[in-house]
Length: 334
Image 1 (tube, rainbow, N blue to C red):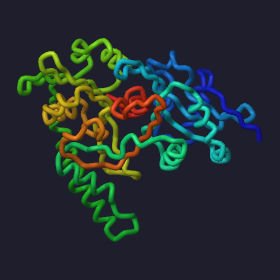
Image 2 (tube, one colour):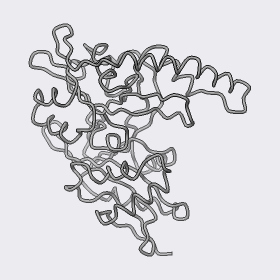
Image 3 (cartoon, rainbow, N blue to C red):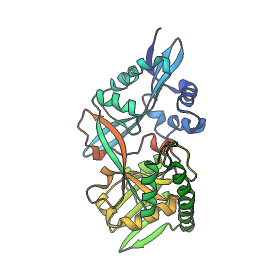
């Protein structure tokens, strides 16, 4: 059995998508997977990641999403690892993909959605924990229902039917009520001397050139701004469903924070900002990596979540966010 690893390029896209649909199932459509290869930075990337091949057949893939971001007074190169899959009979050689990816010098690497097995491999190669929890910010009853669903009794348990009955009697009316509240969504709110804006068209003229580029590269996301005098906090979110590992009678939909600048300014207006985000984006609550919110973070439910990074140039975790990653490409978006 002869195996090889090489960079993935445009001619591989259709074969990679076929491989990913086989490995990850049909929940992601061909069109959704194609976003990994057609984002604004795609044409300037050195590659789309690496493929493992055997006798001219692709049997594995590890995606790479590349970007250049300002960090302090320098420009840092980043590479987000995504969509790591190898067909079962070649899985023992899957690590060859990671070795090829890490052989690229000059990058800070991140992995935001690794499986449990992938996380163990990443840690063995020297990746460090980026975050251990996300914070779910929403109504108390909503947070309580999410907590209960993450601890739901096994199907064979005598409490299983009771749990399902509670889901029908409590969850559906609650989420329907939240939908009704969101029917009339403002795009401009005045709050204690500050302006809160929602939507790319309103937000973009207020941004610096650097932040405008972030917006233009993530048009499919939610864009929000808190402006107080000459200062502003810029927020980017993506709408997604919470996966509880099984079917649900109702959808739990959150706005996941990908980027948050000037955190302290945003925290001063958090209740009003949170309401603006969920009403404008059509979600039920906000979810954010704890490192985004800092020590003054609002009340919420801590949800276990593991993400990892490796930086040979000493990039601090606070400079790593969810932009230019698989999150805005594969989730529902705005």
